[in-house]
Length: 234
Image (cartoon, rainbow, N blue to C red; front, top):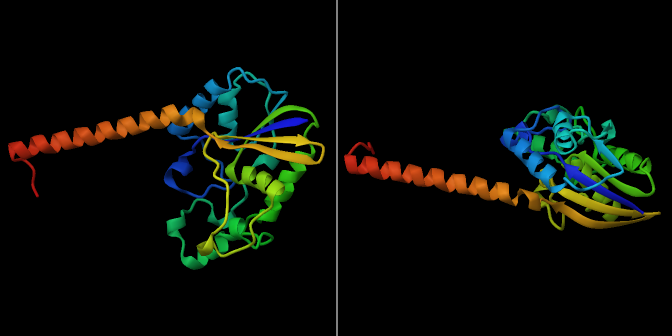
């Protein structure tokens, strides 16, 4: 049996600003680097027979943070879906007509490509090709992207019926940055064991929330002090 772990890269600079990445090669943000270190701490004593990674730097940086001295096989097939002309833009910058075109990559029709990019079918085909080349037994980890991980999961459970993006109903998967998804592969039978486990980020999230509360308290304290001194202009 093959024990396969799929790990999404840490938060990138474009994740932070809400920009569509696709295959644009952007690095990890400072927060993403911290996430990768938290993941490294979690996986410190985990042993894998093979380590794979997308060659895009946000995945590569995550893999190298976890296995700085390990042998990593970089494979272009592990890249995110290519989103063509939409890469570098944000959802809010699009018109409804543009959103209709962009949304085919997750809402269908799945064979339709975004301009200059790939279709959901294209992503699924290269994900399946990569899976077919894996060893039949052992423990394998791959550092990749959210869309790729969802495509692997959908190859097991199926995809929702094509629908308009404004009528998204039913089910889906949420793949957090640096989360772990585990799939067990035995002959032609696949078992989804874990999806999107990011428990190693709880400490980071708590620290971030603490800093936010401290900043709010300082701002309120400053405003209160200025009010008492009569320096606030309304």
